[in-house]
Length: 622
Image 1: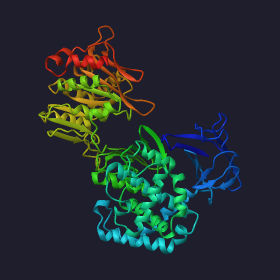
Image 2 (image 1 turned 60 degrees about the horizontal axis):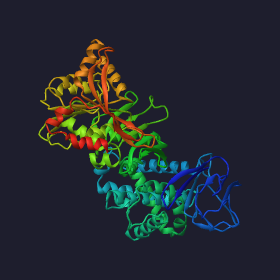
Image 3 (image 1 turned 45 degrees about the horizontal axis):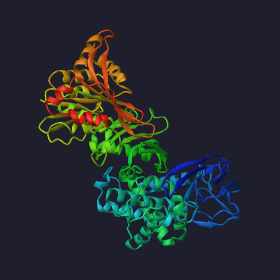
Image 4 (image 1 turned 180 degrees about the vertical axis):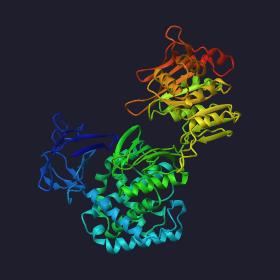
């Protein structure tokens, strides 16, 4: 049993209890789930295992508790099965079980729902004329949509009527369908989309029944303290994830049968449509503005990153075959392929999101997909300062360095925000300069007009036609660039990048993976040696003369991404022979603070008017 607690007054959410047995809820220190509120009794509620489920008892003298929307008074006991939601004063406790009750053949109800959708998917494919080949959602004609609509109606109202509408799965389907609608309402509100989920594909929308469904959505939202006429809480999607079960219980029970049936049908239609013509369960995740990363561990386990924190979600693919077909649907338009002979691929979606997919025999647990979402809105330097990712002093210095054509290396770990910062830094480049960007998967969104974007290409089926980052860097030198921006240095292309910085293309920028400034230099040395058989001393001289500034990015334990270090590259240390750096700004505790060292190029930037020394010193002191 896992108990997720949400305070409806503050919208704070946390895991209150996790264990195999029962638990005690109250204000006292000895309670398993401690609720800090003067309205909660010292010992308020007890939940224990019972035959066929769980038994809940409200202690004498305590205020009443709602169990799935039904009131339980002091001194009373009630039996419930599977997942449930308890409302204890201002707190909503969502009870989650790894194995839901009411299972058959050792599988949970949610697994059975997945199997039902898998069977429906197979039946639809057998009946649907797919001779025209795989189509994306934007390519599907009205005739194809009507055909799919009729097929699913026939299946749901005839062959699978009992499984869908008259079985233990009906309640789970209804709850998942209502949650889909609630999530859709939230996403539309966050992104100002004026459409309803069922209208995306025109799959049998009943305008008369859409009204009651919308009313049910509003009731659920209101129960979670989310109101249609007010601004959304900043963590609205987390609030829905934690409080939906408790808020939806009574609403679903009071819903008319025809409305519930329509809700389930529209949910099944959209789910199958997305699997056949779209990206399956990834469709809604990609629409969510707050999700930054989607990680498919295997077809039945999907994780997301939201607000810098990773969590598992309930959506899954109906089968491994469906997951594989969606991977192929992503890579095929880009002229790339994935199969057992070439089991991994990098690609991108139409919106620019970066995709990495890997299948058997390399991924032994099933197809694995990682999507780094492309931000819907361009991140600005003002955003970074508002989020506390960078200080005004650091912004002033980096802006001046870019305008002064300093060569900059952005270093950091995976997901630390390197590409985001590189995008922001590129915005300081004067508009009259010619930029050439080179990436494995195009992620940079430069605001200048004169930009040439290049992307690497893997080998074709015959093993030819491969173009690496190194090939493109070499070619970029013949394209008369003012600056070259390499999305990430991973290997031997580092030598060409350094040579470009040293031969008239000052002001160039790149990123690499490293945990510190010293690690970044060590990795850069290693990468250069991978691409050229030259002495280490010569490599270090090349690095020292090419680089001017190293910016270190870091992702903190709370998920916040910050600039943690700005260092000047001084040259070669006379004793050790290593590349010498000096920190200009460094993270001290939670704040980026000056070290007292002033970079050698500071005077030059002040003379050119790129940096106002007085204002920079004022920002540093502040």
